[in-house]
Length: 144
Image (cartoon, rainbow, N blue to C red; front, side):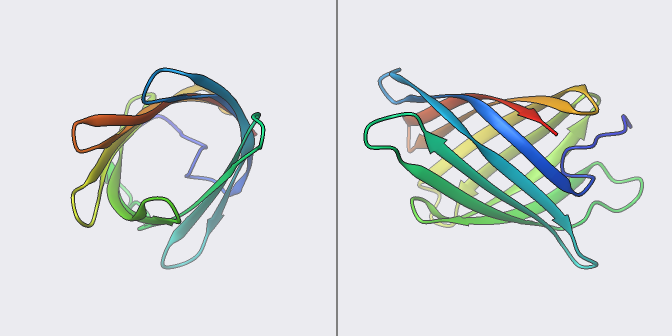
């Protein structure tokens, strides 16, 4: 398995990119992702702020079950004001960390693909659905 740094090592990542709403309208975003490791869980706290008038801030906290040696998947749970509790899995496949998730009710579903560019840079692409409708899609660059 490739030596991933995002999620697998504690640290602060700067994030910037753009969000697309369900109609395809793009909005610039910037923020940070803080990764902390504890004996029983990893915590990923993310904050993104829109470059819009008025600006909006989206915060998400993920609790991740630490990946056991030799394993390539780890379940996670997150909470956000907008979507409630989401349950998903991070799955490592070569240079990518994949994530698939859904809300407790099944209303919201989504996926993320996080590609390692090098030890200090990752690119994330993802989409969130409300039923069959696209809520948002994104492209984010992460740098440590």
